Image (cartoon, rainbow over all chains, first blue to last red):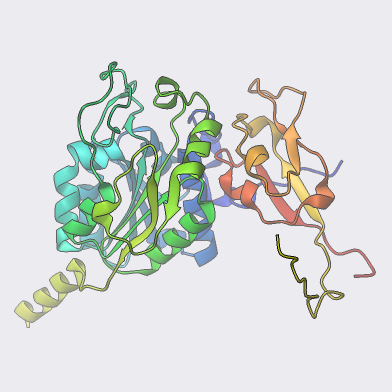
Length: 274
Length: 92
């Protein structure tokens, strides 16, 4: 028996905080894994990387990554990240948060950050409900899905997050599921190298809270659903990319160039002060 | 079905099947089963033993089948499995 060698990515994680608290089969670990892999492949200086997260299960990610990180109040990760980015535009600011945090209470911060095109990279874990507080219906809960607050089936139409981001003016918009780990890592790499407001939605399994009320008791069953339902269509119309139980359109939706806010701000400041 | 025509790759005699060294950190595993289910070569299966978290970690069926695609490394939510290439023995 050879001596156990440590995981090659463990240098990016805070060893004292591991193992993480996420449930068996939770997709948040996969998102963290893919993000850390992308950082490793790009050889980003950890002193230049800031991870900001909000409240929710995935909010713990900021505490697990061994870099400067910021666990903020509910719904405000983009507001805090805006401050970080504008104070020091050399930093790479990444927001990792959930759908309830970014699009329910933090919806306005999201659309206005996308409109201004601030150089923040947003990764949103979409698990279709408020997982941490016990599985209430949220802004992305699918029609007719069962949650603790919709025991007879949900009657509210869910947000189409990629359409919202694209319409608000994000320069890079993509959607993947946690099964597309390679493409997700490539997408995160592309996002980190690009300027402006970039957004990736990751459809993530939540077997313990969402899945068990919707006949998908294990993470494997949710992943099999993603495998069956997901269709890769690059640069298709985000307006037609609604998530339904039969069809999850994944891929890159928007990839455009636009001057970013912090550059315009510092240019304007220089123009006024001279 | 039409008969498929297989062409022999030009560098077939030079390319060696890589030897994989699969490391499973058993006590970090939470038993989600993603690595077992989605391994394209079906290298892993659920073992009988129980780890510190009370779940069955995966075990290796046949390490020679592994082609080091590292999908298990990427899909593991708990950073409990990784694959490295074994240093080449003499003769390759």
